[in-house]
Amino acid sequence: MHLPSQDQQDASMIASIPRTFAWTVFALTFGLLISDYMSRQVLNAVFPLLKSDWALTDAQLGSLSSIVALMVGLLTFPLSLIADRYGRIRSLVGMAILWSVATLICGIAKNYEQMFVARMMVGVGEAAYGSVGIAVVLSVFPKNMRASLSAAFMAGGVFGSVLGMAFGGVLAQHFGWRFAFVGMALFGLLLAIIYPLLVKSSKIPNNRAVVTQKSDYKRALKTLVGTRSVLCAYIGSGLQLFITASLMAWLPSFLNRYYQMGTDKAGVFAGLLVLCSGVGMVLCGMLTDRFCRDNPGNKIWLAIIYCALSGIVLTAAFSMSPGTGQLVLIGLGMLVAAGTTGPAGAMVANLTHASVHGTAFATLTLANNLLGLAPGPFVIGTLADKYSLATAMQVLPSISLVSGLCFLYALRHYQADLNSLRETGTVSS
Picture 1: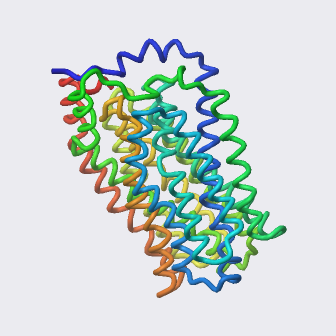
Picture 2: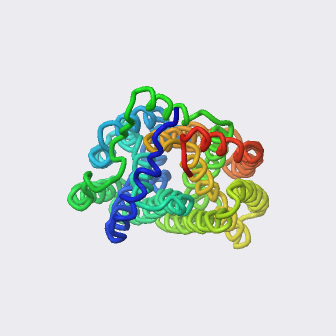
């Protein structure tokens, strides 16, 4: 018995979607993702001010960042499953409203405990946005653009982080750290109002998961973890993002402590370095699609190369003394550090059934958060308390080795796994 191939069923509908509407969907969904990460990462820009005002340790500061990623990791799967079944567009709008309101509450928090609870609610609101958002975007574009779109969409998180740190640092320096949170919250609420006015559920293929028989839906769900290569994509992607998350969280503090920059200048400069990561994600995703047209396995080779390059360059960077050379190498390392997002996203989309793509990307998000985004800032903060932030940064790039080994293992099984799924009619990609 073959599962109905929704890639084939929706091909004609995707072809009939006006390109202007498709890019409108991408732009607005991308914009909300930017708001998502602005609300998440504005905290990093005000670390020095919170540390001073509330006498917090680095571990406590790291926990305020990590709790968001932890909630995302814990809730992304169930919330994405609900969105797949009951409507992705409505779910996206509800998420945006929740994280924006929670960010507003961060701006009026009176102590660490209140801030911690508010940040937890930010994580609840953001939990399934990335996975459901990318599922919506992929549903209105041809499948041969998957790596580029996955990488470009995920880069929205980086761009949002850049804007959150840069604008957050400037707002905090001139108006106080509370106003930085308020500014991020208002931006998110504005986009949440506009989104449903321009993106209609009726025009989105697979807005709700529909499989003709219950047994077929169960078989579709099994593709989430049904192959060794998709499991490796989850693990390799999550481990590599440990590096990116840690750099996003601690670069402003690194520049503040070792380059004597104020919060405004450190936030802007750290934002520029993180921007290298966002640009790299887009370029690496485009490179992946270009070199994988004839040989799907090339995407995994490229992921391995990205891991190796980031590990080597960042190790060299944090072995140097503070100065221009170190900053240049950090920027170069970040250019390829998150390059695995495109290959990993394409692997997940190719190896899972279209009806559960929201849940598939939720599984990828779960791995990204539990293995990378959640533990990264906290672990580095803990190491910084025990040794120093400079020492913690020197240890950080070694994670790339483990991530690269995961993708190397996936390389051995990817084509066989893909062929097996095609033979059963589970996927057509």
